[in-house]
Length: 295
Image 1 (cartoon, rainbow, N blue to C red):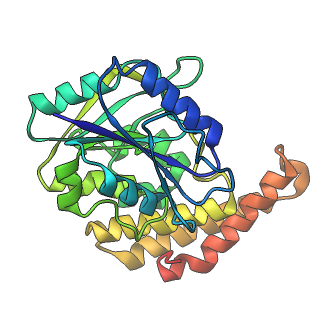
Image 2: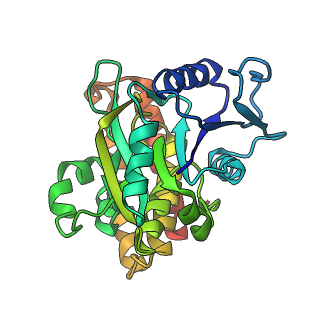
């Protein structure tokens, strides 16, 4: 069974080189096709990649999701290991991956144990999203995750920062849905793959260093994108059965958050710029809630 590795890059040359170095050091000499998709970076990779690495250079910026599809279309392996540029293997990932897919012909996707530079877990999976989770918001969803996802029956999705999948399954599903931007494309892929009958697994013995990208609530733009993509995901999978009710719940939450953030500045203990950004984000959400968060 053969394996290909696809690494996406956008102005992260040093991280990409570190990723490729970690992959080479822990490959145990296994022959492997390695493809780097550069999404029209200003930092050029031509001439600096290790020998044998295939460089796919996008002429114009295509975005993460389309870059993944471009890279996988170039792959020839039975299995594809997809890595973000900042996901660096710190143990052998290729042999255990090939062994897992060879042992189970219905295995569609495999995740790994992601850690930060101190060896602490950074999270590789999440439960399948729910309408209640969107209505409550990310903070409350995280706090009450066990109760919200109590009927999930172990259904989880694997983050694409370090994800292996059977190329046959990827092709059958049509790859990543390019209607999503970076957010939720991997979640949608996992959900479609599971519903198509493919099995999922985690290999916690394989370590990949990935610091994590932080909360989707980090900026006003990102929080609006999160809601737009999450609504689209839930709608696509037939999980929004009462859209008017959900819009009302979201509008109530955003209005409450806006009022809370609008309190006198003397009551705000954080950074003023952060407060201003959060206020801007809630105002944008209020203006788009009745449009189902479609961008």
